[in-house]
Length: 83
Image (cartoon, rainbow, N blue to C red; front, side, top):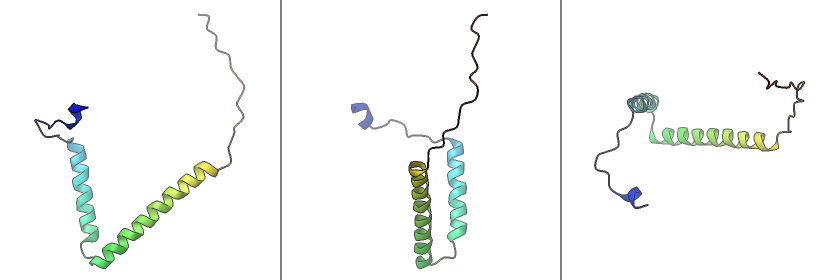
């Protein structure tokens, strides 16, 4: 447990693909929100939050309350273990 809280001697290095994806995402979001005012940014954030939480709730509801689809197994094939 003590090793978890020990200070690192060298900084953590992220993988180059992660850093590239992070940079591309930041550039794309910067272009998307460049001309928006503070009020519009808040509305976009609220819209994003509502849509993603609605999608999450829909997925949870459909996974828990969906009727169980039981497919009938096909003809059982025996495995010949004698070689």
